[in-house]
Amino acid sequence: MAIRLKPRVIPTVEFRAVLPEEFGPGGECFIEIDARAAGPMNGPFVMAVEAAIQRHRIGMRKLSKTDDDAAYVAADRKLADATTRARLMALYDHCIIEWRSNIQVLDDKDNAQDITCDRESFLDMADMRGVPEIVGSLADFEAACMEAGKMASEDDEATVKN
Image (cartoon, rainbow, N blue to C red; front, side, top):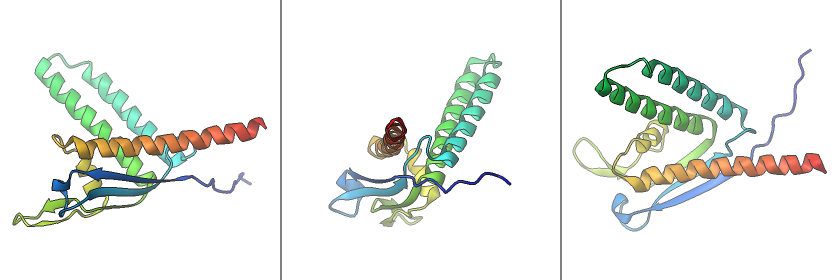
Protein backbone atom coordinates (compact mmCIF):
# COMPACT_ATOMS: atom_id res chain seq x y z
CA MET A 1 0.00 0.00 0.00
CA ALA A 2 1.32 3.46 -0.93
CA ILE A 3 1.72 6.07 1.76
CA ARG A 4 -0.87 8.82 1.54
CA LEU A 5 -0.93 12.07 3.47
CA LYS A 6 -3.62 14.65 3.94
CA PRO A 7 -3.24 17.45 1.40
CA ARG A 8 -1.32 20.41 2.76
CA VAL A 9 -3.27 23.59 3.37
CA ILE A 10 -1.53 26.24 1.29
CA PRO A 11 -1.85 29.84 2.50
CA THR A 12 -3.63 32.28 0.23
CA VAL A 13 -2.52 35.61 -1.13
CA GLU A 14 -4.82 38.55 -1.79
CA PHE A 15 -3.05 40.90 -4.18
CA ARG A 16 -4.23 44.27 -5.46
CA ALA A 17 -2.45 46.73 -7.72
CA VAL A 18 -3.72 50.17 -8.67
CA LEU A 19 -2.86 51.16 -12.23
CA PRO A 20 -2.90 54.53 -13.99
CA GLU A 21 -6.44 55.83 -14.54
CA GLU A 22 -6.02 55.94 -18.32
CA PHE A 23 -5.96 52.11 -18.40
CA GLY A 24 -9.43 51.93 -16.85
CA PRO A 25 -12.98 53.08 -17.47
CA GLY A 26 -12.46 56.33 -15.58
CA GLY A 27 -11.52 56.50 -11.95
CA GLU A 28 -9.44 53.84 -10.31
CA CYS A 29 -8.02 51.06 -12.50
CA PHE A 30 -6.95 47.86 -10.76
CA ILE A 31 -5.85 44.25 -10.91
CA GLU A 32 -6.97 42.00 -8.03
CA ILE A 33 -5.76 38.42 -7.69
CA ASP A 34 -6.70 35.69 -5.21
CA ALA A 35 -4.02 33.01 -5.19
CA ARG A 36 -2.27 30.22 -3.35
CA ALA A 37 1.27 30.72 -2.09
CA ALA A 38 4.10 29.64 -4.35
CA GLY A 39 7.27 27.92 -3.26
CA PRO A 40 8.22 24.57 -1.76
CA MET A 41 4.86 23.86 -0.14
CA ASN A 42 3.09 24.12 -3.52
CA GLY A 43 4.44 20.97 -5.15
CA PRO A 44 2.72 21.31 -8.56
CA PHE A 45 4.05 24.87 -8.87
CA VAL A 46 7.59 23.76 -8.02
CA MET A 47 7.45 20.92 -10.56
CA ALA A 48 6.20 23.25 -13.30
CA VAL A 49 8.95 25.80 -12.57
CA GLU A 50 11.59 23.05 -12.50
CA ALA A 51 10.39 21.87 -15.92
CA ALA A 52 10.65 25.45 -17.24
CA ILE A 53 14.18 25.75 -15.86
CA GLN A 54 15.14 22.44 -17.47
CA ARG A 55 13.80 23.62 -20.86
CA HIS A 56 15.76 26.85 -20.40
CA ARG A 57 18.99 24.96 -19.70
CA ILE A 58 18.49 22.80 -22.78
CA GLY A 59 17.81 25.92 -24.83
CA MET A 60 20.98 27.58 -23.48
CA ARG A 61 23.00 24.52 -24.41
CA LYS A 62 21.63 24.61 -27.97
CA LEU A 63 22.20 28.35 -28.07
CA SER A 64 25.87 27.94 -27.13
CA LYS A 65 26.39 26.11 -30.43
CA THR A 66 25.20 29.09 -32.49
CA ASP A 67 28.01 30.98 -34.25
CA ASP A 68 25.97 33.70 -35.98
CA ASP A 69 25.68 36.73 -33.68
CA ALA A 70 22.34 37.92 -35.06
CA ALA A 71 20.86 34.43 -34.83
CA TYR A 72 22.21 34.11 -31.28
CA VAL A 73 20.63 37.38 -30.14
CA ALA A 74 17.26 36.49 -31.72
CA ALA A 75 17.28 32.97 -30.25
CA ASP A 76 18.39 34.25 -26.84
CA ARG A 77 15.51 36.75 -26.77
CA LYS A 78 13.04 34.06 -27.83
CA LEU A 79 14.33 31.69 -25.15
CA ALA A 80 14.12 34.36 -22.43
CA ASP A 81 10.53 35.20 -23.45
CA ALA A 82 9.57 31.50 -23.48
CA THR A 83 11.09 30.95 -20.03
CA THR A 84 9.30 33.97 -18.56
CA ARG A 85 6.03 32.82 -20.11
CA ALA A 86 6.50 29.27 -18.75
CA ARG A 87 7.17 30.65 -15.25
CA LEU A 88 4.02 32.78 -15.39
CA MET A 89 2.01 29.84 -16.75
CA ALA A 90 3.16 27.85 -13.71
CA LEU A 91 2.06 30.72 -11.48
CA TYR A 92 -1.30 30.98 -13.23
CA ASP A 93 -1.98 27.24 -13.38
CA HIS A 94 -0.92 26.36 -9.84
CA CYS A 95 -1.41 29.49 -7.77
CA ILE A 96 -4.14 31.74 -9.17
CA ILE A 97 -7.62 31.00 -7.89
CA GLU A 98 -9.35 33.99 -9.49
CA TRP A 99 -8.45 37.40 -10.84
CA ARG A 100 -10.38 40.56 -11.60
CA SER A 101 -9.58 43.78 -13.38
CA ASN A 102 -11.23 46.75 -15.00
CA ILE A 103 -8.42 47.36 -17.50
CA GLN A 104 -9.99 48.55 -20.74
CA VAL A 105 -8.96 46.76 -23.95
CA LEU A 106 -10.04 47.53 -27.49
CA ASP A 107 -12.11 45.15 -29.61
CA ASP A 108 -11.84 44.83 -33.41
CA LYS A 109 -13.77 48.10 -33.85
CA ASP A 110 -11.70 50.01 -31.26
CA ASN A 111 -14.50 49.95 -28.70
CA ALA A 112 -13.26 49.80 -25.10
CA GLN A 113 -14.38 46.93 -22.90
CA ASP A 114 -13.21 45.30 -19.68
CA ILE A 115 -10.38 42.82 -20.13
CA THR A 116 -11.42 39.16 -20.07
CA CYS A 117 -9.97 37.76 -16.85
CA ASP A 118 -8.70 34.43 -18.14
CA ARG A 119 -5.37 32.62 -18.59
CA GLU A 120 -4.65 33.99 -22.06
CA SER A 121 -5.25 37.62 -21.05
CA PHE A 122 -3.08 37.17 -17.96
CA LEU A 123 -0.21 35.84 -20.04
CA ASP A 124 -0.72 38.52 -22.69
CA MET A 125 -0.36 41.19 -20.01
CA ALA A 126 3.08 39.80 -19.19
CA ASP A 127 4.11 40.39 -22.81
CA MET A 128 3.09 44.06 -22.82
CA ARG A 129 6.37 45.74 -23.55
CA GLY A 130 6.16 49.47 -23.00
CA VAL A 131 3.59 49.17 -20.19
CA PRO A 132 5.81 48.84 -17.11
CA GLU A 133 2.93 49.44 -14.69
CA ILE A 134 1.18 46.21 -15.73
CA VAL A 135 4.32 44.11 -16.13
CA GLY A 136 5.60 45.46 -12.80
CA SER A 137 2.30 44.61 -11.09
CA LEU A 138 2.60 41.00 -12.28
CA ALA A 139 6.18 40.85 -10.99
CA ASP A 140 4.97 42.24 -7.64
CA PHE A 141 2.24 39.59 -7.58
CA GLU A 142 4.75 36.82 -8.25
CA ALA A 143 6.96 38.17 -5.44
CA ALA A 144 3.97 38.24 -3.06
CA CYS A 145 3.18 34.59 -3.83
CA MET A 146 6.81 33.58 -3.31
CA GLU A 147 7.01 35.56 -0.05
CA ALA A 148 3.84 33.90 1.24
CA GLY A 149 5.34 30.50 0.46
CA LYS A 150 8.60 31.45 2.15
CA MET A 151 6.83 32.66 5.28
CA ALA A 152 4.74 29.48 5.46
CA SER A 153 7.89 27.35 5.10
CA GLU A 154 9.60 29.33 7.87
CA ASP A 155 6.55 28.83 10.10
CA ASP A 156 6.71 25.06 9.41
CA GLU A 157 10.43 24.99 10.26
CA ALA A 158 9.82 26.89 13.52
CA THR A 159 7.06 24.43 14.45
CA VAL A 160 9.35 21.45 13.78
CA LYS A 161 12.11 22.99 15.95
CA ASN A 162 9.73 23.35 18.87
